[in-house]
Length: 127
Image (cartoon, rainbow, N blue to C red; front, side):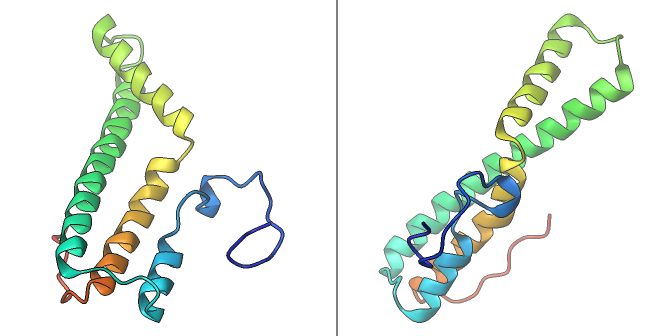
């Protein structure tokens, strides 16, 4: 049972359904006044979330580069490079798309805490 909606939930949810993430919920809580934090706390949480977002972006970039490297080089990779590419692809398979979902959800968390702290809107740098 989903404790938030009172509806039955499918325990087999995957990364495509955002299971494990609550970006929309945090936004709703902030908008309704149920999530409220002091501005200093909001700034600290937002800074940490932005750091996490950068780490996730780096991992997604690394996985994509590893995939391209293996596709391009095929069997011509040095053993050390090949092992790094294999490790990256393996890590991506284990997370089963969770990094990509985090790229979608973390900005929602940032926005929710901005609203919850009553902070002014800030434009995110272009990527």
